[in-house]
Image 1 (cartoon, each protein chain N blue to C red):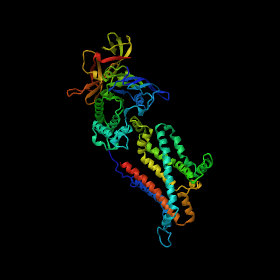
Image 2: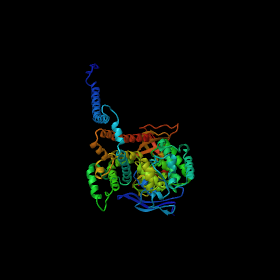
Image 3: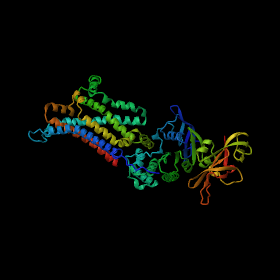
Image 4: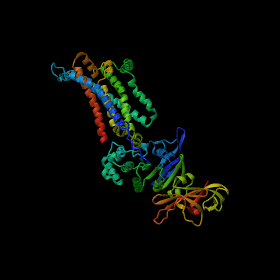
Length: 350
Length: 277
């Protein structure tokens, strides 16, 4: 079944260098999908192909059932928000928002009403006559969002819209973007390299690496059940412990002289050298009933709401994220400790 | 443990930097004064000479005679119109070219820069003889009448303006995020003419004005091309004046100088008011 936005076998080459390969995605109406990946992974190129700024080398892009693969950007009815805001410096906030409506020759009265409506939506009703250089970065990006929404686009594209902003403003605007997207129920594609942003905002995330889709799924699924080593390591912190398979059927593994267990599927044969993965928040410094390893505290880093403890164990190193609470006794570097993790919280990767 | 209390040799290391600084400041002032004199003495002498038209007293008689001359205003007006036409033609060619090079063909910038610099390399006399050779006979005969020669003159002036216009416009384009602004406008439904007219041109206003006023200052007194194309513009008028009058050429030089500086002043004024906003 074809989605509201459909990308089928999309590929892009720049002078023989493949930037995006075999990109297939169906986006449902009103869905918020993020493209997440490191710089150069092809996420912005994919977005630009959807916007019409880059023609795909091959493949098909359909929007609301219509083939727009080679349609010009100004014929697609897609709103776009840029990292650099891209507000027209010669125009006031109101004129910036009204630009697309003027181009569409919308009548003056209706245009004014739409601008006022959007200024209210972005909570800047008193800034209509200001110029972009009189606004803060966060305000400029809100205006850019209003301008993109003014034309009632079928699809909203956001290209790393928060990356030029301070942390606090970024958090506020992130919530604002999600509120507006839900309020208008507009189908949205969001490009970011910030996993926290993608996890917080998205209905689904497309994790990309080297021009390929690594995994598509809901944030919870992406975080808890990463399908590749890249996704596991790129999204969130991850422990990787070298282990030897003892009994794949029973999930028994050996690390140094200790034996541990996992409930996840082991496809490798007995004696195979594999990696055991687990999230730092699953590791505790208490000796639980299973998977207990002896180790030495190597470092303790206070990060506010969590305390990150690195423990050297036989055959490797584990990081444990402990919730900061008033009664927490901080471990000291150099002291001996025990670390443990539940068997259901770890999985094997080759 | 003992600490040596031997005083530092006074006046060597401690005072060396201030003496060096003073010396460098002295030479900076000297260069400025010599440069200023080199520039101001001929100007002052020309101005003083222009005031001596009435025997025994200093006055503006030469200026009065100049402005009353029957050929002054027609030649000046014609040159102003030619300059404005040349500026428009130049803008029409340079702005879309520079914009397209910035947006789509950045690798071609050195080539375009070189082409726009050619008027500096090719002397005006070579340019005008080339024009006469190409357009002085059929099938592209443009020198048959005064007005058609004037069209040729405007085209030649537009070419002369390329080095100034391209650099001004290119600097203006580099100062803004051309790609993002263009793509933002495109995503809002604008086509190329709308993008150029409503987004690029308005944001290039200062750059365009700089290029235009520089072009104006150069074109207004241009002699060689106008002379060979038999145009009665300000340049040939000034040359004739020099041959036939004593004090008026000096007054003329001061007027031409004032026009140039007024143009420069306007560039500075507009740039400053734009920056303030």
